[in-house]
Length: 199
Ligand SMILES: [Zn+2]
Ligand SMILES: [Zn+2]
Image 1 (tube, helix red, strand yellow):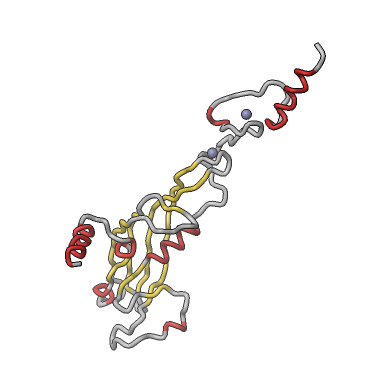
Image 2: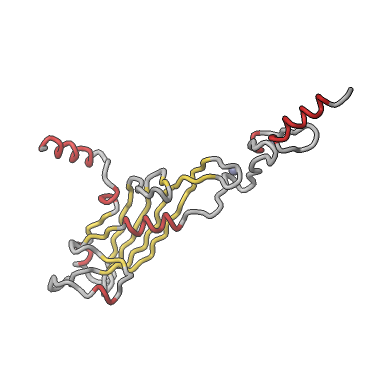
């Protein structure tokens, strides 16, 4: 058991951090500073497990700016990642870049002066620090990625899509169908009729 614990510590030092670790920031130091104090933080975290809704295919990266206010913190963040999508015309798998803008007020859950729990029910929708003065961004990042999912993604703006007759990708090059454009299921029937017709 001890051996396993030390292995996981090594992994963490090599950068294989969990998403929660990568997106959690201890802000106790900033909270102890006067209003107006600012911290700039870099974010670099592994992909979140968002399945079955969407697959995130690269890390979350970007910058956060935290500003101390009288009530708590103002969070301004600009993060980038990419999700896997399917082109709505040609059905090709595509990498969809996502920009996440986070602008939130973050409030503590315990009173900084006396350590007593604050009444969080009064503002149920606001982002809260943990009772260890940590900012856990994972839920906010998760929501922002899911919101960024496009309704009808395209591999490129002018994707020509699929041939309505044979289903082949039109982007792979021109091709034509001899004679009438027919449903391929009827093609065999037509050939049969042609062959049996008198010469
Ligand atoms: Zn396409
Ligand atoms: Zn075709």
